[in-house]
Image: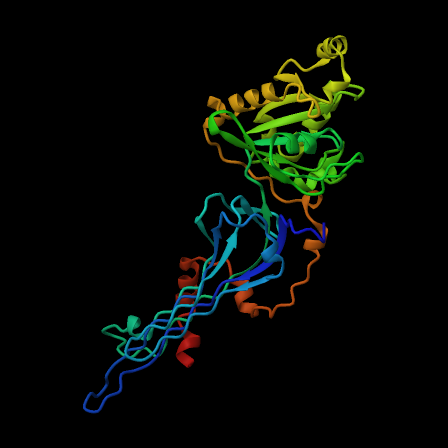
Length: 393
């Protein structure tokens, strides 16, 4: 996968801007004795913002931009002049990108629409100038607020493809062959396992100019949810599919057993996948006669629609399209539901990305200890210290 242009998992280091310090300036003018405090406020630090872009289909561009740093806000000036705000950094990502904390694996946010903006890291708030603290009993405050510190966080970006139908099956079950037959997609097809090394999308034409999107992922083997094979790395791509098409080859020992193994792997990866609409297609039906089909039908699961198909002869393809279209537009799938994204764990992470070393200048110790403070915490600390440090300055 190192040489592939399809990058759906990347780890980057982000840092928002530090807020500018407030000014402790006093007004100085000829004939204006004791002009009083007029120090301006510091500028806000730059934000780190994610923006959805429908023209992107991979995270390849972020593989060569590992550090995303916003600029700091400038300090306030004389005459109550405000410091300039830091420049925001906008990260363009494909639609369907989810973000996780690289250290804890916690889900942070997702981008699902074109042009949608999500503030990933907030820039530090600028400090107040000394004119804010002038009172009737303290007319010459010689202190001002410092700006809030920057926030630094390593995050993992995962791309989950947006498709209507997801193909699920063992290696060499005929998934890529079906996709190439009913769409213009040209996935790699060969007579050995794991010919599909990365997900593929195809637009399937239907009647009256209608169409839907089908997603093919590498084959799943037993134990994929525990780290075996390639399928677990790409199971995330079927989390957004409305319908799951299970494909089992007709030459297998037990169709029902293979289906149950595939379903169990999906449940162990994300239990919500078992709530999606499912269809079972027995592939390579051109090898079967009517008698064998009738015999195999006795062991097929009773809780989901099933049919025999052949991508070579075209058997059952039209019926499959009709069934998929009905399931996609069923009342259950028309109701949009949110996905509960499972946290990242060791089994589902990409080792070469997690071992990536960030050679960036570290933050100060004080900033590292206060990067999660809220506005209230920061203000409380300022007043609890009774501004003794700032007074000395």
